[in-house]
Length: 296
Image (tube, rainbow, N blue to C red; front, side, top):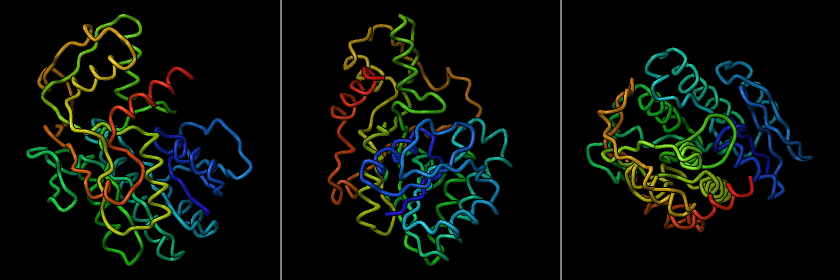
């Protein structure tokens, strides 16, 4: 399989690249800010700002991947609220170009969306629940979803939630918590915001299974519903870190620019019914995280 991964040096993208190479796939991976720090015979690394849509389309038309996994995005929720033009270019315009090129080359497109397309008033959202984002990041991702759906191509939209794990680029909540607790420092974690923390390694494995099965439609691939505080405590317990240093906080205590959904947790029963990867297993995910963290 010839696979194109956008955002190949990101938290999720680099895991997909590694797992795909292990399977013997030919991988083309784009990166921008952070270079992919390894060389493999079947890997072609391409430095590319995906907001340069001419170069992005040209890459797809020339390499003609069988499957595209579009991970690259501007995911800084507050940053999107402040710099809406950048968010639009990266999250919407780049996706439009990928969709157009995928249609021409007949590639199967897996678009990575987000739980933040929902307003968070209900929780445990199913795939056919009506989206209604409360921030600009969620809005750009929803518009990009619609661009994917409204074109005549084979596609799968995958919505994860609060992706965590070891990787390149910016820190995530799990690595932040572990680093703080390892130093004996206090961590504040909110008790009134619920998500479905999604382990990047298991998500990558699930996405490659989707690349093989090629289902069409929207799928929620995420972990168990819990508050940020509960997740931090579970993480501390598995890694034998001082959970007494985790302090309860409320969303109102945090100085976020953009509004966050109160409960954007996802119902994953649809994806769990077709995939063999146990992406939803919290115990499995945290023990894998512990093993990876110990070996890093």
